[in-house]
Image 1 (tube, one colour):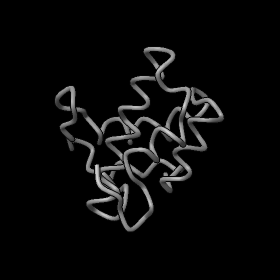
Image 2 (tube, helix red, strand yellow):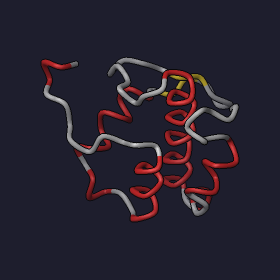
Image 3 (cartoon, rainbow, N blue to C red):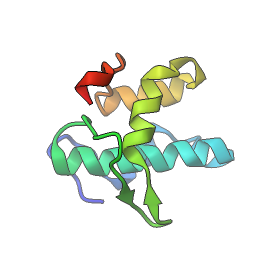
Length: 100
């Protein structure tokens, strides 16, 4: 993953969520964070279409679904996960269904 104009690169993902590898849930979150970083670096935003898929080192990742789920369930996030998403300028208000 290359460094973007937003200052987000591969090592940056690990630095903003260093605890990610300790649990399966953390590893899944880190995968979503890395996919979101790639999308943001390439597209300049995180307005990801619901059905969009990114391919990473494991295979296809349903980034659009993951991004859509996050603001709907903010209480499931740790403070570190929320802070990592804030760095990526995550939109916390879920868009209306008609907007997707």
